Length: 426
Ligand SMILES: [Zn+2]
Image (cartoon, rainbow, N blue to C red; front, top):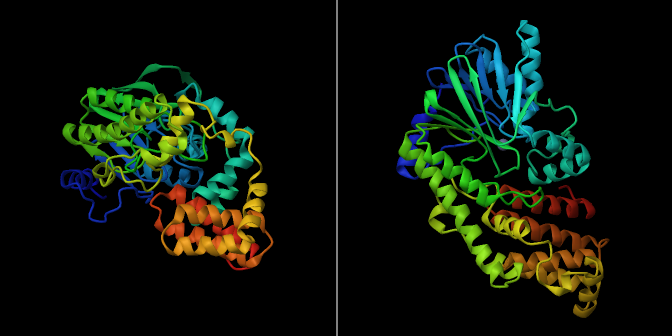
C-alpha cells in the first residue's frame, strides 16, 4: 500500500514532485489513517468506517465502479450506509450502480445517496446535451481516450440521489458526523464536507492537484471567486487531513493551508484583475492578452496548468460578470467565418498563400497567428489537400507547445480532422 501522506508531504515540503505522479488511476485502496481509506481512480473514492457501516464520498466513473467496489471490499465487508456525491460529474457519480449492485449481491440495505440539490438538474441538462458532451469529451481527452469518450453516455443511467440539500446539511452515521457545505466552483452543485472526528475535509474537485478547472472552454459556467471562498472556508476550520477526489491526500494543518491558500490566491488574483480591466472598459481581447497568474504559483506541483489553464479562467470570468459580446463591434453580428476567410484569401492571392504564411509563422514559433491563417486557409479552401495538410501541421505544432490537456485536445482533434480530410492517417 503506497504511503500517500508521506508522498504528498515530501512534495509539499520540498515544493517539487521530482517527476512523481500526483494523479494516479491505479484503482488501489490505501488506508490513509485508521478507519479512513482512499481508492485512487478517475476520480477517487473516499470511505470512512463509522462503526455502523461505511460513509463514502463519490463512486468514481462507470469504468472504475466495479474495481473501486472490489478494492473497498478488500478493506471492509460491512454495509455502505451513505454515499455522498461531491458533484454530478461522470467521474464521481458514474460508478454508483456498481455500489448498488454490490449491496444487492450481499443482501445489504441499499445505501442512501446524498447530494446538493443542483445535481439532478445537471443530470437533466446532460440528457439535453448528450451528443454535445460525447463530442467535447472526445475532444478534451484526445487523443488517448477519444474512443472511450465518444462512446460515453451522459445523464441517462446515472443514479439519482435519494436525499438533497440546498446550502448545508449534517449527517450522522455511526460515530461520525459529516457537515456538508454547498459551494460554487468547478460546478454549481459542489459539496465539500467537514468530518470533525478526524479533523478531515473531503474537498471533492475543489482541490485536484492541477490548476483549478475554472475555465474549461467547452463547458458551462464555472465560478472562480466563489471557488476561492470555499477554499478559505476550509482553511478556517484548520483541518489536519484533506481528502481530495483527484490527486494526493494531505496531512498537517500547515501543508493544507499552504496548498489551499495558493490555489485561492491564484483564482482571486485572476478575478480581481479581470474585473478591474472590465470596469475600466477594456475589451475581452485585451484582457485575455494581459492577465496572468504569477509564474511562481504555476510552478507549484499542485497548481500546474496541465489540465485547465488561467487564460480560460479569464474568459470564464468575463462570461460570468459580462455578456458574450467581447467588445469588438465587428463581432456583434459578424460575417460567417467562411465568408471572411474567402475574402482574406482573395486579398492574399489565394488560400494557398494564407496556408504558406501559416506554415512559416508556425515554424517561427508564432503559433497564435499561424492558427488564424491556417484556419482561414482551410475555411476558404476546405477541399484542398495541401491546405488541410498544413492546417494539421500547424495545429500539431501548436499542441506540442501547450501545457494544458484541454488546449492540446482541441488542437489535436482539429489536426486529426484535417489529416482525415487530406486522406492521411491521423
Ligand atoms: Zn472530477
